[in-house]
Length: 325
Image (tube, rainbow, N blue to C red; front, side, top):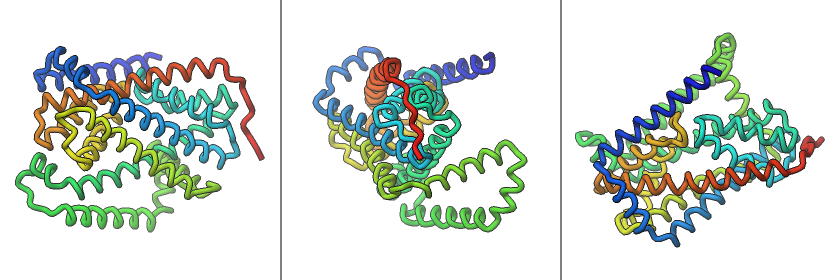
């Protein structure tokens, strides 16, 4: 209990510190934030929210496939509610979302926690691979503004960078494959090794999917929705509507890294990284921070509202037995 409290306090202090640093750097006043919210075109904001909700639904449908591979059929309503509850929990306590998702399905569909948690690990691995691919695409198409801001003295073409990184990645995978038996025996005796082996087992579970093509389609759809949700928010503001679709890709990548930090809902880290991303495209850090605050606030309000409603819904959903032969 004490350990959990300490972790929560550390994450809260980290979030507060990052947010304070970002606000100080931007020299922002609360009136500036209020002005940003007043300038927004809420027609585009509404479109963005609808697309974001669609991404959560696709995530629930993809999760259903993994659960079905383990002979569970909880139904879309229960999986969708569990996904939203997970997002809601992450805004309260970092990393609580995965546990809350699985706990919700345990309550509403009697799915053993360990089994559903294994599918969540698989999801996270797929998301990580997708993010790495997205980072590669971002560097390929947006190398020039990134180079000017991050590596002003480097004169390396983006194609060369991607090819070099790909070759090194393939060499690393080849090494792991060649010595997999040795690494498995070595890693089985350590906590980190067992965790890595568990991830490998999670990836292997994808092979048991009834429709792998649909799983890939859902995965692409999720990230496409993330991207379109970000781009439509660009269109909601005069200062960002002409930045282009490729700039939205950079903001999406930076925002995803921000949301992955161990703070409540990525608070602080998201604001700082996304504000910095806008600087790549000649916006001031202050303007970038105002946009980041609106983008994050839109996500937070939507997920807290839907997650809260989903939690209430689960109180009235009858418990079912989801296991099928």
